[in-house]
Image (tube, rainbow, N blue to C red; front, side, top):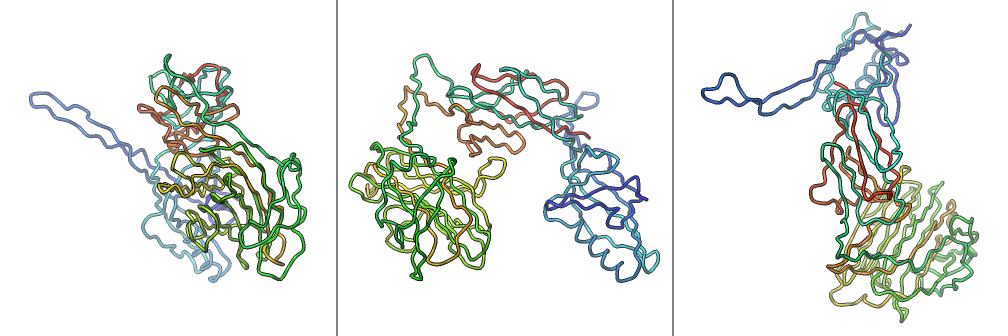
Length: 488
């Protein structure tokens, strides 16, 4: 028999059912909202003015019993309960009575499990809701046009997430409600301003035109070129690394491609690699050269550690001259112990500023484990015009082959600097702009772009009832809104 007040704890990606653990829920009580008000008294006036209202944390009181078959089982379950309710971060509770609602709680203070019998016990537990709301399941609303209505079914205001799929290049993106609250990024175009695209695509390779590339020389770090690249029609793969060797060298295929000369540029590579065993190694590298074949820099992701899965990033200025020399990104500031990496390597130069960017992209498309480093080349040491791109995927000596390291795509753009009478595009067709009012983040294709937020833009809430929303510019977006109803 299961208690009608039974509940589940969701913690660290796992779900724990009290009934299945042998815990009988005797009582479960969520205390009322905790409201504090600040008042202003005015001499000669009866009563007071309400200055402000704040909603504080709430308490949850739970009474439980446990029944076991022995004192040993009692002691084991007791400490399992202690561990279950302790958490550095808040954990969630879902009650069987209201399976469509979730609360987030912390355990504070101490409590004990009193023996009813040597094998049985009961205890009361006080939990704190720092976030004082009960959350419903996520609601999704797709706009039929530039305008949409989202009806907030909760009893409190809720923070939305808007996703705008770009249908035409835009210089700005705005979403506004009927109360005049809005979120805006970019710049609307003045009649006297010229709209410009600051990025011109010079090269895009996804594996289908590798026959137009040339075999690279041995201008790769600590190794030599061998083996062949291939394609699965969705990226660049490695059918062969060449013959294994006991020499302490990297080896694998390398190709080089001439691109239209560019002074200001951006090179982006989406890459992935997995090590299923800790004896496997791989590296994926992108090299940049100027007109005189002088190396401008390199970006890479690699796993060269045996006995553990460890992915390291690299971003270097110029050629290899020694360990940690001229590296803005290295294992010293980018190293994660995980078996799989899927993400982006990017290097950008505008004027004298050189920027290296590495990020992992998670399953929802967001950039996580991100690093950005900048260098100002005041001495013009790396100022040559970009002319050649080289790619390389390798493994170390005779170590085991990693599982399918791959370059999904590599893109090269020429960049143009904007003048005072020009307005640049901020997003292109198929880009996804995300206004995340929950976490107060602005994303373009998963990358944080809060720097584009215009003065006056606000992370607003959905009010109770109908929220009338509109996007600008017209006919530029396919919009979806998501939110979780909040109830007191």
